[in-house]
Image (cartoon, rainbow, N blue to C red; front, side):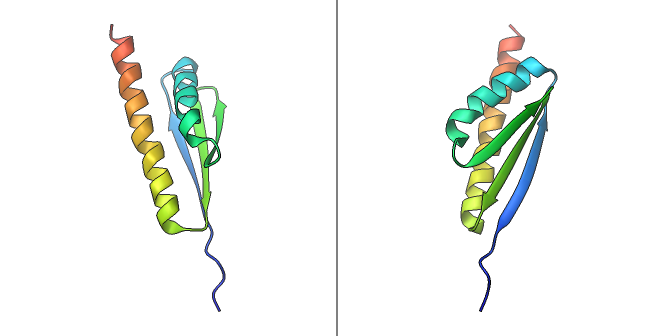
Length: 81
């Protein structure tokens, strides 16, 4: 018999400043509630992912990274104006 697989990961994202980290955290929090635990310390966001399924884990990580890329582009666009 095999034990059930458990996958844990921690993803850290560093921003130019605390304000950008706040914007990103608030933007990502809506989609991540219930799936990803998040924490902000100064200008660094830490996301903790846990899953019993590799496919679910990969989908969650992919969604998080894709969403963060969009937020980052919006922050860059807004700050260049």
